[in-house]
Amino acid sequence: MAVKAALPEGTKVPCHVGVIMDGNGRWAKKRGLPRKFGHREGAKTFREITRHAKRLGISYITYYAFSTENWKRPQDEVNAIMELFEKYLDEVRDFIEENIRVRFIGDRSKLSENLQRKMASVEEDSKDFDSMTLVLAINYGGRDEIAHSCRALAEKVRRGELEPDDISTELIEQNLYTEEIPPVDLVIRPSGEQRLSNFMIWQAAYAEFYYTNILWPDFKGSDLEAAVLDYSERNRRFGGI
Ligand code: FPP
Image (cartoon, rainbow, N blue to C red; front, side):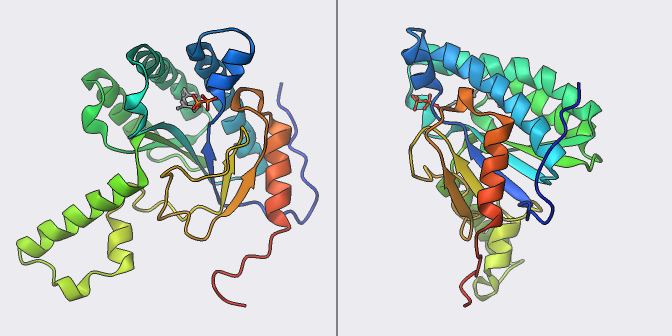
């Protein structure tokens, strides 16, 4: 059954929302369950919140699913997260039916070939859809992304296609994984932590932040609405007055 999205008239809905899906491990621990159960519940929340974001009129939603630092976790947990990606990449096809474009950001080369193949095919099959863009950050790190952009530009300089003096913020931006994806307007971090943790450090330069103590598996559509309403009240000045 379709849930009607209810936001007061005049609410300023952010164009691009970034979500740090935090608190899965603690959610499981509180219930005496292994951490991977928390990730499983977190993946269900991801599905619900994506649909709700579309109903609210959010154009881009980016989830921090796996960072370049998350490989340090126990192998068993890393495997469980990778299995969830595989499962959800199949399910992400349901999003395609809802006209949602799917994109991935991050260094794919360290992911399994099967996962890389599925990612490429979901991107290809959804590339013309325009109701919303869902971005999944997998093996993603903001610093790593900036280094990736610098390498691409350095290569152009080496080939004589670019002068060092012509390197601008726009050129760096065009060579980030996000390419044509607009900057982030609102970053939501549940679970009580108040840090960016290397998530879209370039794109979030002027983002508003919303923190809540709710753990990600417990995060509901109404919590997304609360974040959007809070954002709507903010006075964004982008360095001006
Ligand atoms: C952070 O919580 C969460 C992660 C590192 C993994 C997020 C992955 C998923 C929700 C799996 C599926 C995702 C998709 C897109 C299908 P934490 O483990 O750091 O929690 P803690 O701080 O309570 O330990």
